[in-house]
Every structure is written in structure tokens, then in C-alpha cells.
Image 1 (tube, rainbow over the protein chains, first blue to last red):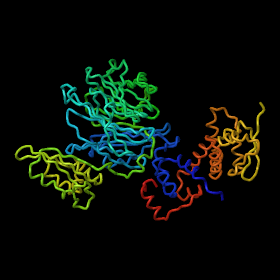
Image 2: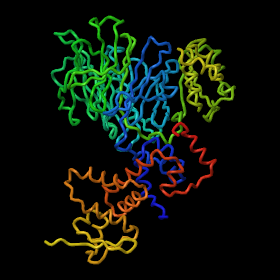
Image 3: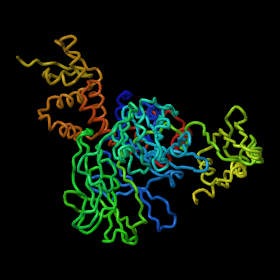
Length: 489
Length: 146
């Protein structure tokens, strides 16, 4: 029998295993588990080159009863696509959430709870089926809006969120100069904290960000948004955020765009601009694909036009790893006909050929989704599944009748059903400031610090009705009831 | 300039001759040559003669650079036995021959990726240092992956 292999050699072999084997082989011996679980290994790990790319597609078919967003995974290789579909175990809590983007095998969702003014971001790794939640700090009020960007820094492999607060011209027609400048907050998973960026790292005050997912994409160390500059007659532009330096840059659009409907996407490692318009001869919607070559903002070139003689391109969801766009087309002549049939298809630009993916529905029932190609990663392996980063702080706002003030006492934080609500702040877990407004009203901006499970909080948030004061006590003490109602509102 | 020849000695004291300009594809040998001129025999006390013969066959290959990737892949594919591959990978790691090490480890990883835990331990000669209960607890964290 030969002597034992050196651990260095074992590391070289472990490094070349696919994610699923690594999850199993954590049990081989103690040394393997500590290696695989180490943050150094997780950050340095890249799926072996023979592993296929995956493609996640999200879509919604409204005629179906559950009205949930559907997610389907494909093995995106050159031989089997689209035969090899796989099931994606979307975290329960992400089912009603919106995808913000994808980077390094992680997906980022957000969900807003209007009553509490709280937005939660979920990071999810489908390859290891783990997710964690991050609370977005500080609610903003009109005319302020904010956008969340997400990306994993390719150098540190640290997931990063950026929250940009900007002034929206829809809510505010006055002069921006009377407002303070935009605020940028950055969250890194390694620190577990949000911090405010220095004022020299903030976009210009007139830049407005969109909130739809098709306007956010991550390539290399940059997050890109399709944005608008409110000063010069609402000129479109692309904003980039450097994940390693936290700097924003403005990218001007190329000349020659039709600009009927623009959005951005990722084609392999390049930024593409999708320019959809109506072809004047066929009267069908077509889409030009422009690529920014070599990451050079001045080098946009038009690659091709997505077109079909007898169907319209409704939107482009994303691109396969081989560069073919995934689009939603509809056959009918009448753009406005809500009953005409739509289909999710892959378009082959060279042949102008269309491959049907078998996902069809009446127009207006398939709503815009997104497709993301990704390689499996180990990110989040060293985090507890369902963990909430930082102590949850949520703030109630509103004019509360005097009787309600007394109901918001420390006792209400105890979970009578033996759940996991637990007070964590020093002063009995509750901190209330009372401000006298008029004779019978008090404004109570109360901060309640708790550390419950994400599921419990999600239940409270999603079913909480805006009858402030009266319901707070009940909701906090009966999370199990509220969990049952969640998801139907 | 005449081609200099080096002599490498395996664990079981067999001697192998190889031209120096080919041998220095190994970073380890290159450093040894630089340091002491390597006029004498270079001992490789961890590499047995069968493995060293393979390493030398690889170093002596006459491939055009653009065919090199395919060659090294085929070279390890033809030695599909895990014990042989492990010895080869270990020698390539010790001698710092990156492409050979990459390909051999990739091949081993590919062969063992669907193994059971017991098979992995046997193939890589690793002892299980956990009790069955401890092992089960760790398995349960990713039960779905098994």
C-alpha cells in the first residue's frame, strides 16, 4: 500500500470537483470539511471547466391559479439544450419576490413590505440551496426613491449590495438643488454591515435609476443600470458601479438608436443594449442588439437584428451562453390583442431561426421575466440557511391614537406560541420616542429590535394590515397565524 | 551548444536520463539546476520508477504548442487507473509541472465525483476520523445532495 497522499494533492483534487460532490464529500473526513467550508476555499472555488453552464428562466403565466412566478432551470450546453431541464428549489420566501440580478452563481431577490416600509433582499445560491436575507436600511419617501444593485466582486468574491437614493422627477417637479445630494449605501456580506459612501462616490443629482430587473446587469466587476439623466430633456444613459472601488461612471449611448424601447442585458461577458422598435415595412416589432466591446464605453457595435417575418419580438429575456437571445414573441398581427398567443423562444441570429421552449400563453398573461446563465458556486456555504444579516430593525410610522401607545410595550415581544421572537436590545427590546402632535395624538416612531427567524418575520410583514397600534400587539405575538395568511395578499 | 543531459533517480534507485532543456519544464528541477548546476544525479525520493518513466515520457513529448492541451489530456486519459493517476499527479505536483498536474487532478476528480464516501476514502487512502453519528449529522446538512 502506498503512503498517504499529501494534503496539498488532496486540495488540488478537491478544487476540481463539482459543487454537488463537494457537498457530499464534506463528510469524507474532518480535514476535507474544514477545507471545503473555509472562506478561502469558497472564494477561490470555480466550477471545473467541463461543468455545463446553467440557465435560469423566470416567467409568470397569469391564467394559472397560483399566480406564482415560475422558475425553470436548463443545462445550457451545445448538445442537449433545451432537453435537460431541472427543478429549482426557489426559497419559499422568494416566491413573491422580484429578481434583481445574478452574479457568480448567486441570485438576488427583493421584496417590499409597504406597511413596515421595509425591504428585504434575499441572496440565494441554487447549487447549494441556501439563502440569506438582508434588511435594506432606512425607508425613503417621495420625492426620493431608491434602487438596489447586486453583484459579487470578482476579486474578493464578496457579495455586495448598493442602495442608491435618488430624486424622481415623477414625484418632484421642482428644483433638485434644494435637496441634499444622492445617498449611496453599500453592504458587503463579509462585513454584514451597510455603510454610507463618501460624497465623491455618488452619482450626479439628476440621474434617475429604473427599478425593473431588465435594467440591471452585472458583468465582471461592474453593475450596470439603464438610467436617465433628468437635466437635459431626459436623456438615457447607462450607469456603471465598480464593485471593487464603489465608483459610479456614466456611459453614453451610441448614435443610431431607434430608442422606441431600450434596455440592457448581458451577452457572455459583454454588455448589450437592446433597442426594440417597429419595422416600417413588415410592421412587426424587431430588436437591434448592440454590444459594448472589450468593456470600452466608446465601442458599441450593432451585432444583429432579432426579427421574424411573421411574429413580433415582445422583449428579450437574456442570452444563452452561446450568445443566442431568449425572447418572447407573439404571432398575431395585432399588437394590442391581449388574447394573441405568446411564446418563449430561443432565436438563432445566423439562421434567423426560432427554437420554441414550450412555454406559451396568451399575451398579457406571460409577464416579463429574465433569463440568467450562471456557473455553480459555493458562495453562502459558510452561512446559515435562512439567516438574517444584522438585527432586524423596523420602524412604524403614523399617527397612533393614545391608547395604542400603551399596547406597544415590551411584553408584546414575547412569542406566546413558543416561537423564536426574542428581544435583543438592552432596554427591554423596545425603544419608543413619543412626540406630541395634538391633543389626542402622538407620533410614535418606534424601533423594535428582534431576532426572529426570517420565516416568522416574513409572515408578520406580509400579513400585517395598516391599522397601526391595534394590530401590532396581536401580530407580533401570533406569528404562526399570520404565517398562514401570508402569500395571499 | 551541445544539449546537456540530466540524470534523475527514482525512489527505487533507478536512473533516468533526460535532456536538460526538457527537464526544466519542471519548475522544481529548474530551480535545482539553477542552484547547484546539477552536475550530479538529481534524487527524487518520493517518485517511484514507473511514475518517473511516465513523467519523462510526458516531458519528452514533441507536440506543437497548440496541440499540447489535447496531448496532455489524452496522456492522462490513457492512464485511467486511479492509483497510477494519483502517483502521477503527486509527482507532477512535487516537480511543479503545472499542465500535467492540472490534467491528472482533473481526471481523478472526474473519476471520483460520483463515488460514495467509502469509495472516495478507499481511492484516496483517507481514514474516516468521525463516528457514524458525527458523519450522519454532517450528511444531514445536505441530505438532498446524496
